[in-house]
Image 1: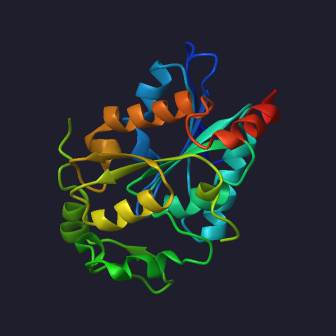
Image 2 (image 1 turned 60 degrees about the vertical axis):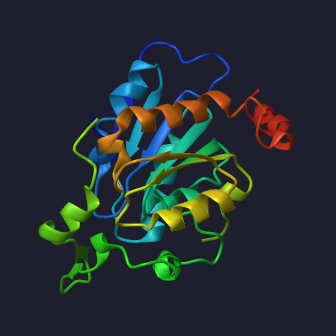
Length: 158
Length: 84
């Protein structure tokens, strides 16, 4: 299903005539498009065209670029969805005129001029991000014992 | 960042009440500031894995209602006009 770095999935059936039919999903940091694997089939079964962006996670500009390319492929109005870090991405990419609504999923919702690195400082430090591993190229990852456990509290399933 | 889309477009927000990556209080702050239609879920930072039906329901609610003019009615004509 990969096409130009995007996972493209087209649903069947019919969302109602007055509703938006295109959904673009943007994953967060330390993650990939598979974040949405459980949500995509539910949306498709209801007739939506679903695109999961694959963010490079190399920079804000790069992630906005990947999201803009996915938006360019849509044939009509779009609901743009972002998880976590991708809240920053959709806040910028959402200015595309095709985007008619935004859904933030446990996501940053910055205003103009606010950096993601500054936003959490008024709140207790999040356990999941307490001890990231930074390699010699400056890429960050999370230790599986700490990051994985803290990220997944309550995620055993419905 | 050049502009914040939530200032001019209707927004929905899912707060994860057990979040250990972004503080739930911070999530509520974002949701309130953007005047989002807000849903709180008893879950971690990954609601799309723990409660995919609830997350899909919020997305579909947004898709169904965004053109209804219930929120930010002043911008409805502009949006419809763009696509018609």
